[in-house]
Amino acid sequence: MYLARIEGTVVATAKHETLGGCRFLVAQRLEADGGAAAEPILVIDWLGAAKGSTVVVSTDGDIARAKFGNTTPARLTVVGIVDAVQTPANAEGKTA
Amino acid sequence: MRLGIVRGHVVLNPAIEAYGGKTLVVIEPVTMENLRAGNGRGGGKVLIAVDELGSAEGQMVAFTEGREAANPFWPGSVPVDAYCALIVDSVDVRQ
Image 1: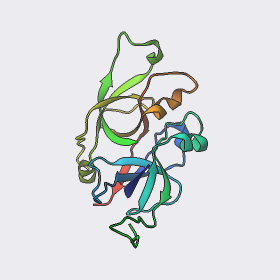
Image 2 (image 1 turned 180 degrees about the vertical axis):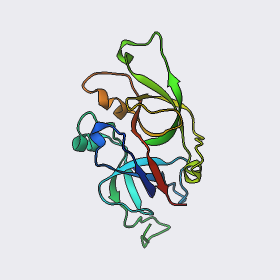
Image 3 (image 1 turned 90 degrees about the vertical axis):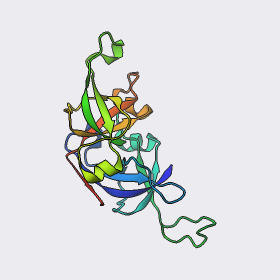
Image 4 (image 1 turned 90 degrees about the horizontal axis):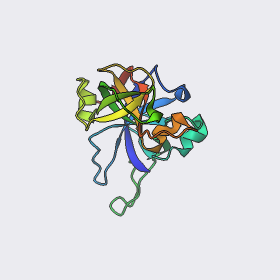
């Protein structure tokens, strides 16, 4: 699992049959220094993450298989929207 | 999943039996910079994926990698590690 920031949305008509009705979001994985990865990822979200939200992304497809069936190619899912990240440098856990 | 642009198709002859009838596409992953610019460029390291959606050259797709890429062939056992899950109609990203 890792932190990522939601950067946008994707609309797709042609998709795997198990992915009907899914919400697809473009995200960027966050590094420890607050920087973002050069390559975007596409995540599936059913929690309602908005553009600019920091989320936790799981790379385990099991949750997607439980939701969309055994034949789904879905893998990256938003498993939570981040309220605060507490580190020694940010002890107050200011909102990410 | 990652986003990439279809650059071509791969034809195998011979190939392992499990690949019979499957379409393989060449995908160039897209960097965030190019995605924001919407310039049709990729910039990532090219890879091969199985495509069952009929994507054409120049189209942007999202592909799954890893074990999950073989899920569509469940309960069969096919050695696939990248799979086109959708064809992108439009992208809306923060500038």
